[in-house]
Image 1 (cartoon, rainbow, N blue to C red):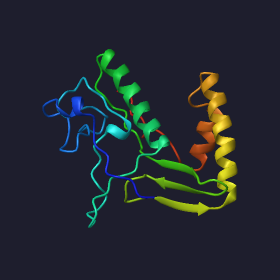
Image 2: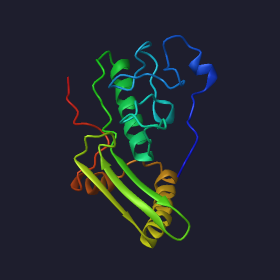
Image 3: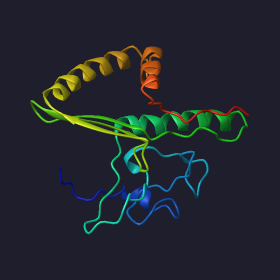
Image 4: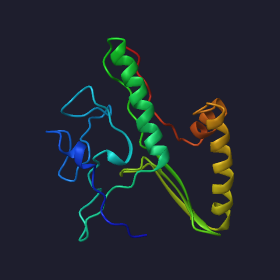
Length: 171
């Protein structure tokens, strides 16, 4: 898959010291802006340096599970800030992906997504297409019920070594 290079939103990129040259928000390990500690950022708008230099400039992919990890850390860190405590939650940036390609697909797990990795797994086939359909139905059901991470999901993924947040240290 080839995509043109992404660029950040002009209005955000115009804020002094908030973004890199491409308009992506510069963050610390707690998902906070490096320039403005009251601004948190997650997802595609986050500046993540490329894994390696290549002849054609590339960006680091950002998957849904990785973004959930970022958002979870932000929620904990905002709660800490409101309670007068220092930020402590860090997303793991682990990646789980089911890429549907019609009647086939590709699946991968990267723990963490940014190398060096502890786990790097990839498979392809028709089963991925079917798994994606099943996942979409499951995901929509849990969102309709207002549950972002059911306890059984959390423990099944944890048994596989996949967690959203780095181990929390209580202060």
